[in-house]
Length: 296
Image (cartoon, rainbow, N blue to C red; front, top):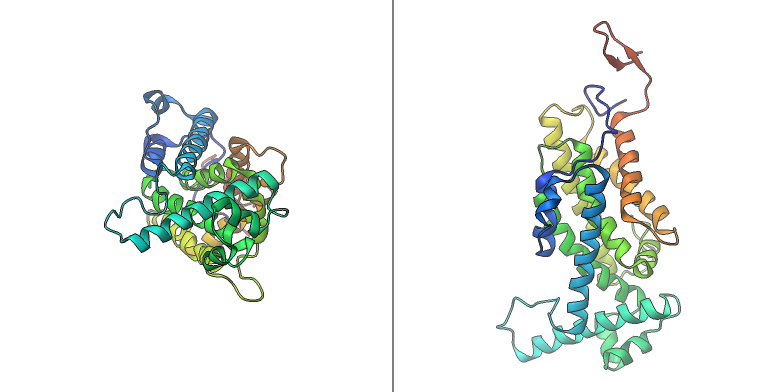
């Protein structure tokens, strides 16, 4: 079965469109140069993903240095105690990121992280009881910003495959920005249905994200169904779940590479998503001479 009502080919050159290139301005507060509007195809995808990577790293360096309070720079009215808590949290995140990257997630210890953050181990445990919670704290804050900012920039007039490409490209750029964090994060959380035992608040927060992401995908899919561009006899939530399953499996495979490249990774994901949209039924030429789906 195909999600397409017609049999249009879906492996054309990638064209993210102007609004999807504006995505980086809305998501990370920077604009892409005017030349970006003129570029299409794989080149546009490469430039888009490279800009994602540069802006993510730039914001990360500012937050780590303390130049910008990444957690709450917009609330100057906070009291001294609240500001102290936010500062400790920022230092813990920066220390955890640095130790995870320099020593590796498996070799890192909470005591090393506490020492680098210049706090006691007991204070650290007030914010995160274990390494996984520290890792999830970093990942959660980063992904929340991406999720909240990316969807509004998607051009709903584009074909579904282009919308999906734009939707997932920022996530690929984020994972590629620091594989030393991405690999353990994906490994620790691959089972989105949940883990056995007690979940800390940051791990629970991570797992709670999948329904939110699928809801964003459902909205995109439902709009395509209402416009008659894809089949309406399949539940939009089921289609969204299929797309998420493809993404989760593929991003894990991609991150296992020694040096994952965003453009190559998103291009393969696009092919798999396009295959899911097109379906694998054999085609035949109909009476009008145009290719169509075989019917049993």
